[in-house]
Amino acid sequence: MIRSMTAFARVSLVAGGKNWVVEIRSLNQRYFELSLRLPPAMVAFEAQARQLVQSVMRRGKVTLSIAEEGKNGEAPTYELNEDQVRVYLASAKKLKTKFKLEGKIAIEEILRLPGVVKEKTAEDAGAWSWNKLSELLKKALEKAVAHKEAEGAKLDKDFRQRLEHIAKTTQKIETLVKGSSKIYFEKLKSRLKDLLGDEKLGEERLYREVALLSERSDITEEAVRMKSHLELFTTWLGRQGEIGRELDFLCQEMNREANTMASKAQLFEVSQEAIAIKSEIEKIREQVQNVE
Image (cartoon, rainbow, N blue to C red; front, side, top):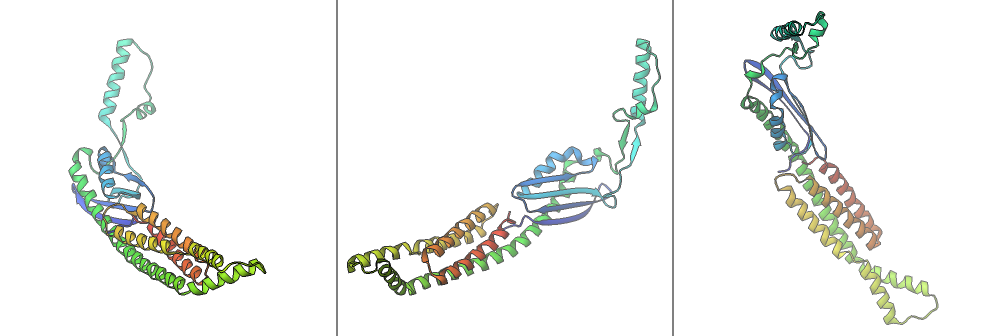
């Protein structure tokens, strides 16, 4: 089953006596990129969180945020760490006595010292563990994956319909070329006579030249390769894992065969059908960019 790179999941859970909201958004992007926003109490587990998310969301621009419910977007509040202030003051007093230093310590200087003012959090970091955080993340990731698979199912259906259309159009081109071979042969022969004018050309040589031109206009190989690409594309749709790059490559190959068929056949009807194939391939390729 194919998966889309586009996904959205929002999960509300109760953990540690608090209500938490986990949001995951994933947008189309060729490579994996993760923007992670965690509360201060969970920052210690950022590396593990990144590893977990990447193991599930393999491609795309992913944004994951966790916030206490009702406080997402609010300005942070701060509190004074009085114990840290006492430590600083005691150290300053000791230095003054030991080295006989003069001067006073301004309150502004104390507030600028590390650890004196800290952000007030809803829950202390010590109350969290990786098991608790991973439980939150896994539930949100499960919902995001379900969304990816639902979107992937829609893409799969669209791909198969377009592949079937391309297959039928390719068959139509083969029929057109075969059905018009005799007419095409006569046109080529007439064109050669017009080019040569009154110059005599042996019948055997004439047919040899015409046969050579007809051979150059044969599209059998291109049609066979097109069918092979279509079959391989369908096979990839049934595989697990990352298949977006492979599908994109097959689109390029199918487009090349359609161009060659149009240029070699030199028939207006074939050109029209080849354009129809190219249009379908382009629509497929646009959608392939969103396949994981």
